[in-house]
Length: 382
Image (tube, rainbow, N blue to C red; front, side):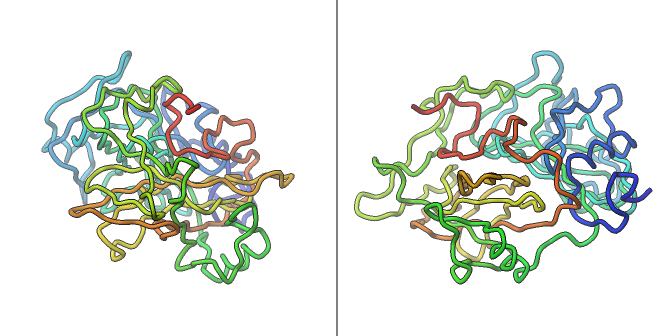
């Protein structure tokens, strides 16, 4: 098998676009048995992964090392939850392992990378994919043949989930796809990636180190609101329902300090804020949010997430980028963050081909031109 069978040039390299993912499904590289893969699962540069019919509550997270997951998990199972029909509630700060509907039969030239869906991260639900005989989370080795499992840990809110619900997504790629810092600078000169006040950020002002840094907007709106902090002891959120929950039942508004553009993060509480910069992902590229260097302080930023080709992009230049949601949690001690403090980083990859459909182009994309950070499960803020 080669790239030509995926409808791509023989010498192609990079992240598979949507049309090649469709071909991968047709060829049996990705399958789901009787639960056929649906068109709605296929995104511009990734595939949504669906929960299977059972969730195992486990006493600890683990990696299988040299053994299959189904063998090693027997040492850790505490309870078994049925996700069929009405589904089940997953409790906070409790790890669950869920077999996914999809399986892989990768050729030797394809590898995989998984990440939580954006809405999953905004609910403070920690997820990562596990494969058989693996020593790493979220990475699928070239040539892997076998099932996929998802570790799920709700951290702030209990969540109700059921079979078929997508909480994570998978990218497939081949060859060298990551852009170097010099290539990022060149790309930004041709097709600006970051904007401020509708204007491209000058190349000399870009902060680059294995990716582009993003900073916080802590000026906020006219009332000084800059984001939200998750409440404690809330009712469950049914992840399959959108636009139904009152945000005030789950979140406290966060406002900047009266005389300074800064806030102090309370330890172990989850915050949703916005980037100061607006991001644009050109059609021939994809990006991934990566956690900030922990040496910057006792701060955990973002669970990582995929940015599809077309995020913040408009063919007619009627708008210039979309701001990114940033997920923050301080550890151990209160931590002060200031306006335009760097807290996250975007790494960029080449696409093997331009996707047939871009983010935001009639595919139900939820966060194009976002001005707020809450997930799609909450009613719009008036």
